[in-house]
Length: 534
Image (cartoon, rainbow, N blue to C red; front, side, top):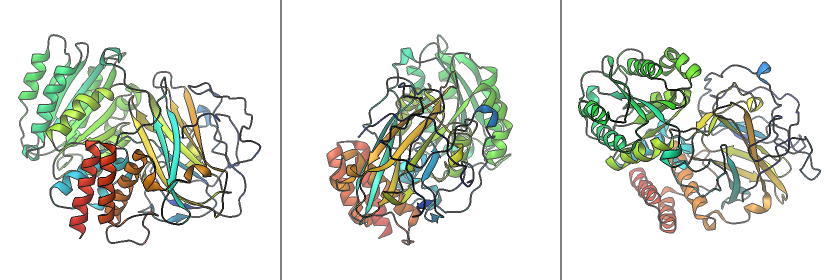
């Protein structure tokens, strides 16, 4: 069910503070004492669909818990820092807490790397498994908005564990414009040519895909090439494709692996090259291609990013990380892209690489939303407990939902973002269950906008495994990721989780219904993991 509206501004009492966007997520125990209900609100600026900003209550007279109050730029706080508190994502937080707030994430590297590990006959390290990246690796069928911003879809279904359901919050941007209608691109490729990149499936994939991509970019697009091993150098300054494609092909063909990995120098030189070749009216982006096994120079993600902070903040140059290799520095690459206002993916085959560079990268040239955050508020009269699945590194303090100086996610056209919650309803509960809102800044004007969707308990009547095919795909991906993270520790599995062998059978049935090769690949990955876990 797709619902929109309810974009009114209301205040709320100041809640106890939580840590910034890097706080580990928690499954949240909702107390019995706090009453009220929910109305997620706007901030005085109307959203892209012209929702009301008159402050009237459109909840039918029933009060709901309020989100964080609106903040103007004069009261905003600075960018939040990472304050990890350990793996708290499987624990319960003190009540009362009715809100869940996180920065949007379109990364998929975790799932791609897990598939590579399983294909090599080994389980991925639990620390590299991020459930939201598994779920967001699959096509969705959400309604898309007409302009910039998001549509909001909220639905769900019952699991086979009493009173527990999976609730899905789905956000979608408009379809990507045809190539001729998007802004021109100024792409700086920062390519790892260290010795480890000589392994098949690393530099060779990148060279092939970059060559094909160069064929498909427009004449008014520009490319620069920076390489790094023990040192970094600009192989090709920012160059319009036009009549210069041969120069670009020559630069790509000349890439050969050598020596160690000074990733910090590569990123620093890449951003300097991007700033020097900055194009007004174009999308300026750094594309980092690496196995992220940094072993020379600066190896700390935050220190690397601090060196290029001016380029990021003043010029809005975003980072797209492409991971390669059977051994892969997942944590470093994820941190770089996350804090570099970008995202990551992972490639292990020619098909993967061509899809990323020839389909996904052009899709990511444009931006439809900056600093996008989501907030879901659950109704305490109908919801007893809930747990956000994944987004461990993307949490935002609830009171900072409308603090537009707190970092969110950058999202382009053609994207969908899905968040799944395990939700325990109160026995016999009926009526309003939750409202989900997304807030973003216009990529050009930085004006804030919001959109909302609501869910009623009656929408959870259907059994999960007879629900829509796409919801079942998301459930398989989430349960699979949770099982890979949990391993032998079954102390707190997701409600309704199936044994891995049974989940593999379920995945194959869903794949048959979906008629989607990506879902076939998921089913095969679950089956491999089941065999490895015994």
